[in-house]
Amino acid sequence: MTYHLTRHLAPALLGLSLCAGPLGAQEAPDGAYIATAADCAACHTDEGGAPFAGGHQIASPMGAITASNITPSVEYGIGAYTLEDFSRALRQGVRRDGAHLYPAMPYPAYAKMSDADIAALYDYFMNDVAAVDAEPAQTHLPFPFSQRWAMIGWNALFAGGDPLHDDPAQSQAWNRGRYLVEGPAHCGTCHTPRNLLMGSKTSEFLAGGMVGAWSAPNLTPGEGGLSDWSDADLESYLKTGVAPHARASGPMAEAVEYSLQHLDDADIAAMVTYLRALPAQPSAITPAKDSGDQAQADTTAPAVVKPWEQAGGRDAHRLSPEAEGGALYETVCASCHALDGTGSADGTYPALVDNVTLEPSQSANLISTIVHGVTRKTGDHHTLMPGFGPQSAVQRLSDAQIARLATYTANSFGETGHTVTARQVETIRTGGPVAPLVRLATPQIMIAAALAALLVVLLALWAIRRRLKR
Image (tube, rainbow, N blue to C red; front, top):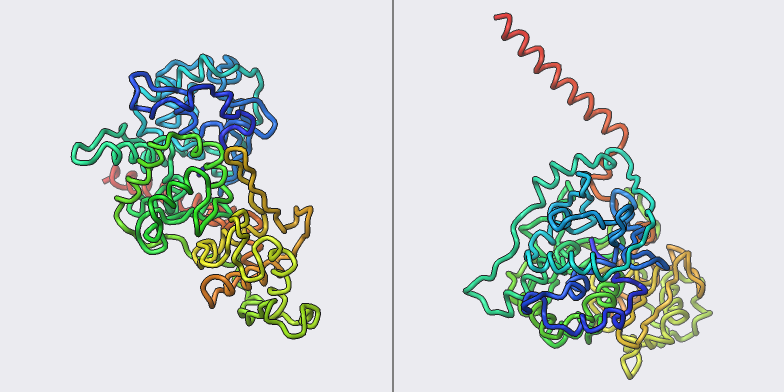
């Protein structure tokens, strides 16, 4: 589940390491470059904190997970780790003290990394990263997710595996791209749907998945995927977060800002080569669902009344629910995206017409963008769109207002018949849909499961005792 290289570790601090050749293509892989490709600091550097000193709160369906200190501090970090200890943590999710890590750390993907790259990464952390003698806060998940030993079973089902080896039947670019996508860049962590136990559905690899309040789209050439993207568009999106019909936001904006933009052009091209060769799959992403079962008063899509077509002006329709979405768009969106949704002439403000974010399968991203806004830094350019949720310092909109604004925008510039409800906005605003596994982990269900397990044990003991008597 991915998402920021260090917020303070600028590329310049990495020196020439980011200009080195592709990892794996050098005689001695560059550890700093590998750390960038693997986006290690995204989780292990907190806002305002020292690089890799941990403390960053990672949102997960089970609760907030606090990233650990991975500086070479002997007491609080990984300074006492041997290369074997480091490799075990990275590939198997097991700390030096034997405790199990949570898969918010994408060790199922890192298991596919080469021995040489892991050794180079270890050397980088031990010799080039400054030790920070500070202990981050501990992770405290609710029961039963607090039981780390349960990860033994989860790992047996969904983790493990061997490092990737080149397929001689494929090109060098394909092999390189597969290594990056499946290994250090861990694209599948976000872009692959999860099953009931939160394991990746390998049969739907890269068909799309939910990352909290954001959706990670289908990366295969299938329906809702990359079939309409050119190679140049996809390379530009990975490198800059900008494509003619899409802009990176949320977790993907962070991946571009802190990791992908710093990769060699050859590596970006290799990733595109591999993605292009994937078997086509239909998108596993569905439109955002309501968080409850009760009917919502605004479930009927309002008629689209476009601001530039209104005869009586915005005020004449102020009390009309059918016109409120258009009036809100005119008020908070049109100054940047234009009344007709064509954006700015220079492309600084993207066009909404034919923008993939307005597709029904991307409704979570449309809502999240309106609620949280967008921030993305590439090179010396900072893209910033304010959010209009409860935290907004610009203009705060209610869930119902955001729903009408999203519905209006989607129907005006995307596919018609798209409806967003206030309950859907509430679901996204509060962190996204609740995972089925979390829904099942209620006290009542846990007690019932424990009683059922106890009954099974008692019946087994009774059967054994009866057999012994015979």
